[in-house]
Image (cartoon, rainbow, N blue to C red; front, side, top):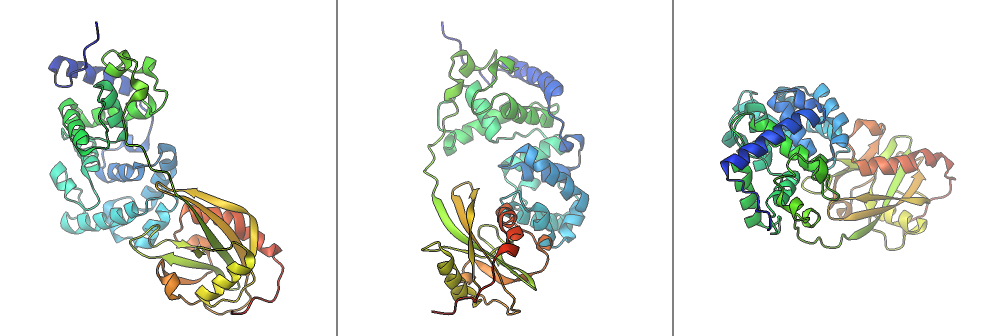
Length: 380
């Protein structure tokens, strides 16, 4: 006889799940600084940082960010460049920009006090249903659900949901189930427990079902289907994009360009990069002259730098050079499509940069002293 599916709307089963999960969470939850506070600002910051980012990566950024900007008023008053600099390396930089803008709205509209109701939190820019639910339930004990990738995975296995979880109707169903499961008492702990279970036990591959507190009510586990769930839409092939990055040293510093708003790495500074039909030093030198007006002999480094984004794989060939001229670069129309400014920066640590730029810097800046000086190429 087949085991029946778990029914999330059965009061007795729901209470059993809540109790088992609560005991497990109290015994096995990982120590995290945002779990030691009821400050909605600190909880909100952690949730924004944790979106599509591993806990281990977030930890030092979270600590440093709170040390520099300990409350909403401090974040609202800080220049955007300071916020981006504190965020640099975490990726998804629009999150930082949205965080800053939302803090300014809370400072002006709510007098610096984080709104305590789910509906009010949801009205803030850059805060979606998941983040609003997390802050409202954890900081203010409001009975509202959360639904992230971890929770969707737990629910799809628990209830043997075979529909594509990226489908809007399936997600609507999952939200409905998650809402039904949240207890009135300690809803924040329950939501954190569901996320923790997905992150540490009910993992995407090789779930540790033998250690799961819910294995007696998990339909997928009893039918040996846990590795087949959840069902997701097959991802398209990730495009491989090849670029050239130029690292120029001069008496005035290094040549950096600032990304335009609204695109990838907005407002961050980077070594100028462009597509190159033939990736040799002579072609790169000519391209640099055409784009900036700088006549500099470049040398190609033997190692390249790769960087993985959500929807693309980037590979950068690095060209380095030295300029003794004090001439300022010009921002041509071709460069202006991606950059809003280009200039010499004397202190690389003074401007916000992406992790990719840090990688390129580590590969190139310390090698520039070995480049022989020679007459730079002229215009075509």
